[in-house]
Image (cartoon, rainbow, N blue to C red; front, side, top):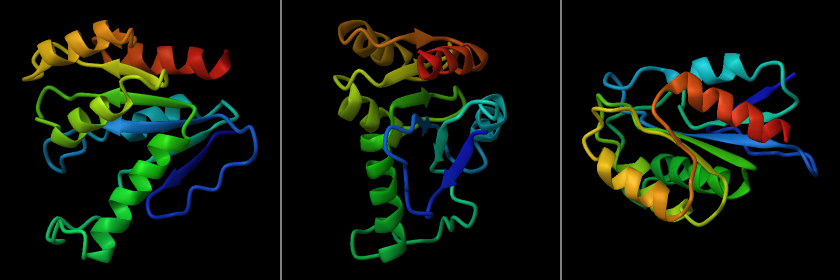
Length: 155
């Protein structure tokens, strides 16, 4: 029943439709494809899953505002973060995830975040302090993040 919307497909949510944005480590070659696991785990729910892991991403793209492909990706992600009912955020220990850290700061006060930051993430202490300060649910394992997101979406 869940439907997956991946960048660059426009984010077309029905009025009142519940949705989850999959924010987190996406460094190609270093981060596991955790988003696919999430899609499967939520497949039975009537929700939209907003997945920024673009199938045709090209790491050679110039990361500049005047590059329409790069800018479109970043704007898609910002729109998804703003429109999502819930934001699931995962910090993979094998990555540095600078954009995810930026997104944590952007959304810390939103009330939408559920964060997973396993031991071994290089800035786990910073993530823990931000989550504690802004009362953001924080779990240490990916299956716990899936469960917490399911519960929030079904509430």
